[in-house]
Image (cartoon, rainbow over all chains, first blue to last red):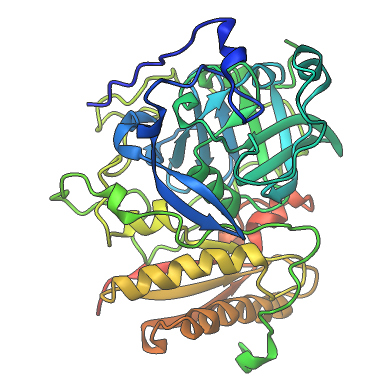
Length: 220
Length: 223
C-alpha cells in the first residue's frame, strides 16, 4: 500500500531546484508527473488534479473519530503529525493530510478565519526574497502560484497572524515538512475545506494533538 | 406559523457579500478516486444517519469566551489510526478512504452537507452555490436519496423571526437544488429557527454565529 517516500528531502539543494512555483520545499521528485492526473477547472483557472492513487491513504480526506471539547466546525491543526481536522458532530472529524512549511512551525494557538480568498495572490516574505532575490514581489493567483486555489487567513483579535491554510502545487509535499509555507493541502482538499469554513471559523493550531491541554497561545 | 415565502423572492444572483470572496469547486471530486474495494457494510455510521438532525452536540458548557485557554481536558493520546473499534481519536469513523460512492458518508466527506449564511440573510453566497452545485450533481447521480433541507438561524430578532428566516434559508436551498435539476419531490424544507438544542454554540461572536446560520442537507433513506 501507499509506500510514499518523502523523496527528495535533499537538504539545501532543495531550494535550488524549485521550479517555477515559488514556495517549495522538497526537491521535486524525479517522477513528479505521476502525482498528477489531468486537469480540473475551478473559478476561471485550471489546476492539476492530484493522482490520489499514489498518495498514502493516510493523507487522504477521511472521517475519523475525534474526542475533544472543541465545538463543531472548529479546525484543528496537528502540526507534527501533518493532519488538519474539521470537527463534526458525534465525536467525529473530517481529517485531511497537510504539509507543514517552516512558517507553519512558528505559530501555535487559537485563531479565527477572518479572511478567505479564491486563487489568492502571493507575495514572498522578506526572508525568502533575501534568499532568492529573483522571485517576483507579487504573484497573481493562478495555477503556478504556490498557494494554490484557496487560502484561509488566520487572525487573532483582529490581527493577521501571518498564518495561512492554503493549497499547493506540489502534492508530494503533503505529509512532509517543507522548507516554506504554512499549512499546505492538496488543491482538492483546500477547495473542500474552504466551503466548510465560514468566516469566523475557530482554528486551533497545535504542535500535536496531545498538546491540547496546553493549547493557549504558548510562545514557542 | 412558518411562513412560506415564494421562492422567487430570493435572488440567487445576489452579489456574494464582499466579505466572502469565496467559492469552491463543484465538480472537484472525482468519485473515481474514492473507489476502493466496495465496502460491504454501509458506510456512514459516523453521523447519526439522516433523521437525528445534525447537531448532536449540545451547547454544553458556559458560553465560550473568545480566546480562553482551553480547559484542561485529559489529553487523548495521539494514536494514528488504531483499532477501528477503539474510542481513540484518529481511529476510522467510517470507511476510511474506501468510501462507497452514493453512500451518506460519500456525501458528507466528498460533497458537504452545510451551507452558511450571513447575518439576517437568506441569500446564497458564491461559496454556498458552489457547495449546492456539488449537492445537486450528487443527488442527480444517486436518485435513491431524498433530503430534508434543514434551516437554522440565531440572528437578531424574535424566535418567530428566526423560525421564518430558517425556513427562508431552507427554501432558498431547496429552490436552488431544484433549479439544478433535482426533482422537487425528493426534497422538503424544514426550519428549526434557533431552537436551543440545535445551536452549535451560543455566543455573540462570529465564531459561534457563523456555525449557527446554516442549512444542512440531510439525506433521507428512500421511503
